[in-house]
Amino acid sequence: MKYIKTFESHRNSKIVKTDKPINEEFLGALGKMIGNLFKKAKERINKTKGGIEVEAIYQKYLDMISKELSKAAKVDLNLTAATKNNENPEAATPEKPEAGAKPEAGTPTKPAVEPAVEPAKESFSIKGLNKINEADETDEVDAVDVKTAVDQLKTKKGVLDQIVKKLKDMAIKEMDAVLKKYGGASANPQLDIIITSKKDQFELDYLNAQINYLEKSGDKVESAAIAKQRDAIAKKIESDFKDFDTKKPVTYKEGDEVIYLLQGKKKEEYKADKKPEEQSDIVGVHKISKIEGDKFTLLDKEEKPTIIKTGAEIVGKVGGAEGTTPEYKVGDTVIFTRKGFDKKQWDAIKEEDRNPENEAVKKMITDGLINSNKIEKIEGDVLSFKNTKGTIYTKNKQTILTIVKPKE
Image 1 (cartoon, rainbow, N blue to C red):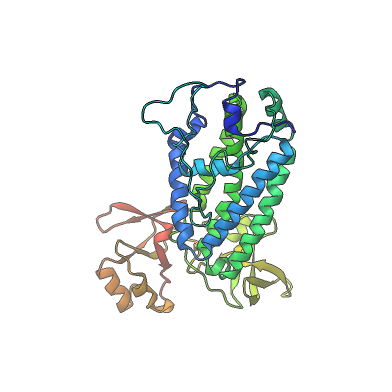
Image 2 (cartoon, helix red, strand yellow):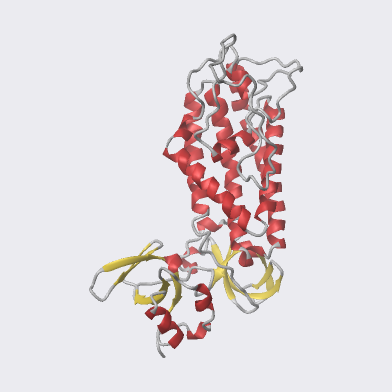
């Protein structure tokens, strides 16, 4: 079987010579953003119930994808190396010395051995660049020329895409089982966010592996084109986590009118600051008839229990609720958090008493933990208010605790 054994064996062959480290895109601002994003994600995964189990599933399937892609295209698209680069983008693969060159003084004569790493604990750092699908040094493996290898990669792209999709879908199914085990999306929104980000990370690692391969093969044009797709997904992963620290569990009960995703629609398509009826091609609104764990049965237009949804497909209650983003409008008076906000103190106040006239709420306002004001302007997730001196200040929607109901 003819294929390029590893990126490094290909890189150091007589066919390709380069004085530059691979993956130069990752050395810029975007690369640092990706590295910081994934380090932060690792911290969040470790502190979220079910996060470590989801990460273990991700690493398992990433390894499977790498092996299946190598079999299908006879080229080593090492997705696990892409994952390692994501965590430490500035640590580009070092150049190996030319044959016969003497090492510099103080340079070890043997390569350092990477310690074994448990995937679930080291979320974004696993096997090194030459560890996946690398034949034993004694195996007879013939390297094909660069053009043939790259042509093989391009002509079999459709097959490779199918492999990634099939295994990715299997991985997500296992991850969803973990989500269900730990209460579902409504009770464990952080785990739901992690799983959503993993769907995107499969794509990012797949694209980045292609970029690495093409760059080492000298095809800068194709690698640049794929890099644009990769960069867009990196920003999408950043967006996946934007509400992670402020997302709250939601408690649903039978009879609640909820907003749910229509079949085939994704959460990112739904805009919480727009009315559901303005997005009738994305979401529907119906009452909950029955709740069985993470399975929700909703009443249809004829009041029959025919609509079945999971917690991940429910995006909130109509009118807003804890853990969801209500529909705000200019003129609404809201209560929002300030520095030093005490969640326990707020949670101790009954929902029906959460207004500026309540003594407990007044005390929290006096103590500077919360404040109440009228919305002057809305721009996306940013709400503008005017203080007593007429100065405009802004707050993010995620800081809003409740809308103050007008007196009857």
